[in-house]
Amino acid sequence: MILHEKPLNVKQKIKKKLSDGNIYSYLKESWQLSWPMLAIMFFEFAISMTDIYVAGRLNKEVQAAVGIATQVYFFFIMIGYAITTGTVSIVSRLFSADEPLKFKQAIFTSVVSACVLGIVASVGGFFFSKSLLEFMNAPPEIAVYAEPLLEIYAIGLFCHLIYVTLNGILRSCRMMKLVMKIVFMSAILNIGLNILFVFHTPLGFRGLALSTTVAIMISFILSSKKVYNMLEKTYSFSFSLLKSILKVGWPSAIIASSWQLASILIYYIIASLPDSAEVIAATSSIVTALTDNTTMITSTATSVASVLSDNATTVTNAVSNSTATIAAAAYATGLRIESAIYLPAFAFNMANVTIMGNLMGRKMYDEAYKSVLTTAFISVTINIVLAVIVLLNAETLASLLSKEQAVVDEIIIYLYISMIAEPFIALNLAVAGGLTGAGDTRATMLYSVVTVWIFRIPVAYFFGIVLQYGSAGIWFGLTIGFFVQAILTFRRLRSKKWIKEIL
Image (tube, rainbow, N blue to C red):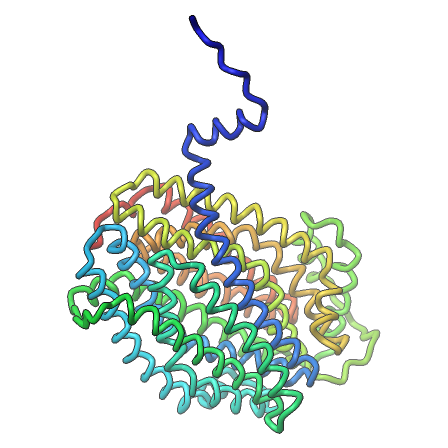
């Protein structure tokens, strides 16, 4: 007697189809690793937004100084990425390869190396911050605030660099929830101290840097305890493992340093903006044109290009503030808003590093490839939705973060132009995370360097300064490279040339 199976409903059919193709399992694993990372990104976003919000309550000079100081600070943090990126790739492989001694050696080696780099970064950050500000051509009214902030940041650089590596070790071992708890505690402490130090102590604006330093130090202590227990008194330094870590990590360090240096140069370009009637009038025209087209998201690029070609000859509103200062404050604030959209993209990026590393350790290459593609699809979809939300609420968001109308107008311009590239940024980050987990970091380094130094910086300078389109020309030029980088990175993944042994 043959028993007939009960017909499946639509939901069950879809679930069965996904499960049969292993897509459901990829989605499930990706989400399990990604949602704690998404929470971590949100907490870090809350910290950065609090910094820029509090700075905006003071004045635009402090707001711009926070943006510049943060870029310089993270330029030094990037030194640690050579250790952290290599550590995540190597440790995640050993974690799934059942090699306990080598696993502990890799952890100890990476921590010791991070300590050495931490000393170098902290000393360098303290003594060369002023030189970097001069190199960036920071306006005096901004530099006077940025320099004290950098001196305080430098004190915490040692702990921050080691903390970044400790964080990477815990993520490699799939301890995302523990990392999430530590970052959550750090975020609450940072935000609370931020408000306390700035508004209720004589520290004033210096409290912005001190609150971050204190929170990082406490997070460092908590992470150190957990990693110390994982070592189980196995304190063995391995130069061969250090070589493997650096082999994977140095290209990522070049990428990160390249982007941070580019960010510093962007402020140099901004500082070169002329205070001319033509630039100010063009800016005013762009705000009007973009605001009137909030529902025409797909044609934003065309609208911007059209407006940029207009020659404004009169100024309708008197602007007494420096164009460069306004643009710098708007850029610092716009980046914070934009970072909200980066949250899922960076979460999936870091999840892909771990997923790819674990699967490569088990030599499951095809599954690793499909997992990265699945995660990339989710990341791009979420990113598009968030970009649309930001576009439709650009004016409201800008008004919340700045009390000066000139800065608000400039933030709106930045958001409308930068949102065009967001889906491509999400695709690139997700795929690059997978390639990093596989140890294929040289190709991503090449694509990143090409993007930054052939497209973003030169084009931004050309549009903004040479053609005199002002700050809007700079913002438009900065978005172009992302299209090229996303295409190159995706092609690299599809080629499967990254399937190779690292250890």
